Image 1 (cartoon, rainbow, N blue to C red):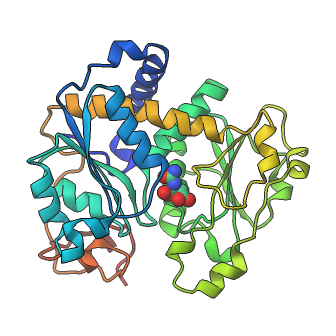
Image 2: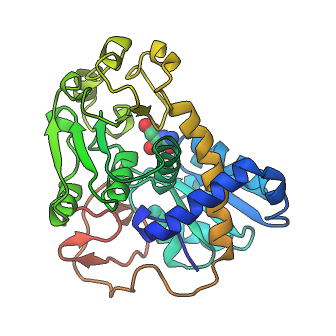
Length: 349
Ligand code: NCD
């Protein structure tokens, strides 16, 4: 059985195939309208969502399947103290595949450790968001007809923005891509991502100023400052208006660049930019539906029992990150490799 927890769970060949299938679905929807007949998708959303949940649900419905689930954890038994492991053990009796969003890093991994039905990570805390990345990649491929040789400006909350972490990991696998990380000092991209880039000798710079990067970028990936992840609300208030992309800044940019945003937007892109033909974020949301259709088809057809990651032995060493699922899950086994928790990828302190 295959799960999608991290974008690196898919090979680049598998990603190419998913994009091809998604494009075929977009062009010939009728061909796929019964592909998931009698199959059920469970959407377990322990954290708010509009696009991701609705795009998963419409993806499954357009494949002829059906959908069960919840969009608010206070309606589920989690509110009574149920663990993620127990929740998935029950849901697996009702559904064929699950998309899970959770405020704690590593929660979908806990569900996938049971290996009962395919688990899709629909966003785990400030950690990863691989299906948003698939939507991003499909959009980029559509606009540039390639995923390599691009300069990607990533702007905003690079610390807590999970979409940024998954996108960087994904784009780092294609040759000659360069990154410009644009953020306030307090919200820089995590060290573990920079370490991965360093190990692969991938070019990147970290800057604070958006304006000076405008001329360079082929892709400008704007993100929201992730209010809900701040421990100190005053820090959020201080940083919330760090970047606003407006038509004046767009005048500096290349003619054939594109602007992406995972959405929801707060104020980091002025609405007048929506009329610029380089603004692709609503198209990106549309791609999200087709690529999730392709992903559901892929995961439901995978019958291999080889896990994506070789099994690790539980350790005595424990993760103490309060934003990791290991901090709340009952009966959790800890997996630590080279001093790094395998659920949240933070260094053990
Ligand atoms: C993103 C998320 O949930 O991480 N939204 C989405 O899935 N499209 C981005 C965000 O919330 O800022």
